[in-house]
Image (cartoon, rainbow, N blue to C red):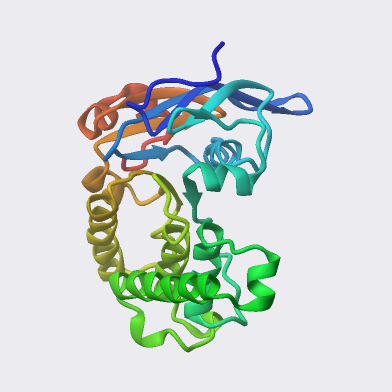
Length: 261
């Protein structure tokens, strides 16, 4: 197989699988995200959703299959290499640098695109200073888009929960991705915060011209915002289609044991 594909897909996942001992946690998972896609990945608890994210982002190395980001094969690469290729993520359990300021958290993401090298950093060359100013400007723009610019000097750990979610998204965007993976972004939010988040996700997709794949348990949010949905159950893909097709799919209804889908 060639290690490159066409540029028509931002994320192309082909038959990715992983086993933990005798358990097949994800079996031949496939997915294709074109530019501007806003897709969902759902399933009951333990279905393999976060494991799939970990395979895409290099936390786990797949036992089989392949992953392409913007036409470049990335399965087997380290997480920072995959991020540099254009794929960023947030986590189900927020992972901020709690002791750092809100601004510095976003700067940490932006630094991946603004590496100066040791000589420039030590000597604080003109090029280094210019790059640092650009990083600051970019970070503040992202905080403004997220609606938390007024909190840039606060420690990240002191932000309200919903704002911590927004900060984590801002940090992911600071890496300038073309594909953004959101792992349960609405977890712990109240109804108004979820409504605002839906608007924000659409804004991010349109403004930054990227593709978004999200894991989410809030079915109202998923069905309202996602154009296409893939359903996992025990590591197997049991359905894929638009929201209407997923809601009417007998296998999906059975997997959720009568819960609202």
